Image (tube, rainbow, N blue to C red; front, side):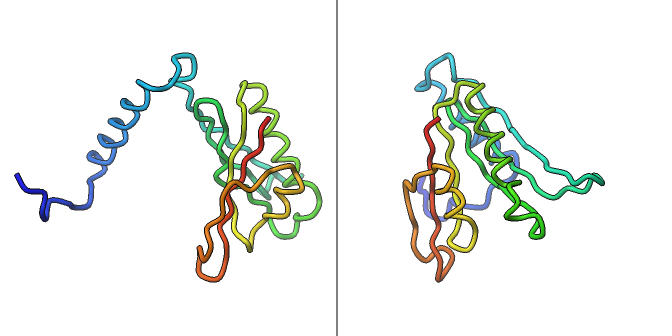
Length: 141
């Protein structure tokens, strides 16, 4: 068999199969007590009238939490709501015995905000997107 011209877009079932094979492989190398630790942890911030004005979407995986999205409505920024969301996920991570939190942001988003909260840059990709930087952060907890 030759692999030439054998690469194609995956179906949803094929993508699930590939993901599960990697999970199966990883499980052989992860300590048993954290092997199956995977949990979505999503937080919502609402105004007094019940409107969603912010939120944080994250995943607990093994011994850390990865924040995928932290967003606060423009008119509510600078009032401590982002800090409140970040503080809440940090407490949840501590309660669940995680050792660190990781997240990423762009030049035009919130690098100063995360640094103010004790997150350290662990990587930067220049020109991603073009003209900006993509920052990767970590905070030990």
